[in-house]
Amino acid sequence: MLELDDVSAAYDTTPILRDVDLSVEEGEIVGVMGKNGVGKTTLLKTVMGLLESSEGTIRYDGVDVTHASADERARAGIGYIPQGRDVFPKLTVEQNIKMGETIRSDSDETLYDQIYDYFPVLEERASQEAGTLSGGQQQMLAIGRALVSNPDLLLLDEPSEGIQPSIVDQISQDMQTINADLGTTILFVEQNLGVIREMADRCYAMERGTVVDELGPSTIADEDAIAEYLAV
Ligand SMILES: Nc1ncnc2c1ncn2[C@@H]1O[C@H](COP(=O)(O)OP(=O)(O)OP(=O)(O)O)[C@@H](O)[C@H]1O
Image (tube, rainbow, N blue to C red):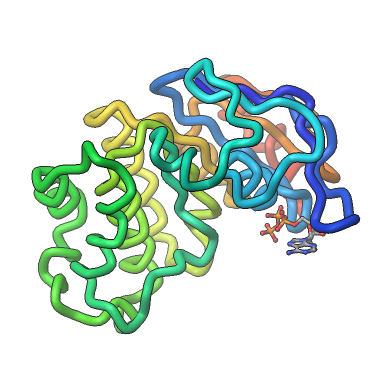
């Protein structure tokens, strides 16, 4: 479904990603782990088209999207949940979700029911300003806003950041349920060992802007093996 072949990217003249090779099959939940500053967010921005790659090829659903805009990628079915959630604090919960609706024409009202089934707190607080929600609730809102555009591939940037552990567990389980129910493929980046072990079918490790290892289910289960890529 998604294939990166030798992808590099830079902020102005500062190279960040170097020769990244990575693939995600339809229906998978794939994690990318790595310490602070290795380039995880930059990777997701490059897949989303918010940062143009300087070299390499990005294919989505068999189509070369390397030079497609972020809008085009969103309309093709890629959803993005940025680090820090980026909800609109002065808009209500419902208005925030509606913002996601405009992206794709096959978004429909039944998706609201599904989102409210997954995250009942969003229905309870539908008319409340998003800025008044807790961090965990804002993360749920950001997920809901992305889901309402009916994405086929969801890019999720550090869902656990700044959220209390019990809610982190719940969100990890919710993402697995969404993956199973809706068939949404998920590529997420994380530093939280527990989230990686809970959510990922398979995982890539990044160091200094590039992918250095790929870990299957048995290695993900080995805490020491993945801690190596996360220890500060
Ligand atoms: N807009 C920017 N302009 C210039 N450099 C940037 C910009 N954003 C990030 N960087 C740099 O790019 C490198 C990779 O940052 P990135 O945010 O992708 O890492 P990360 O692995 O997601 O880290 P974190 O876990 O802290 O979010 C860092 O050295 C960072 O300082």
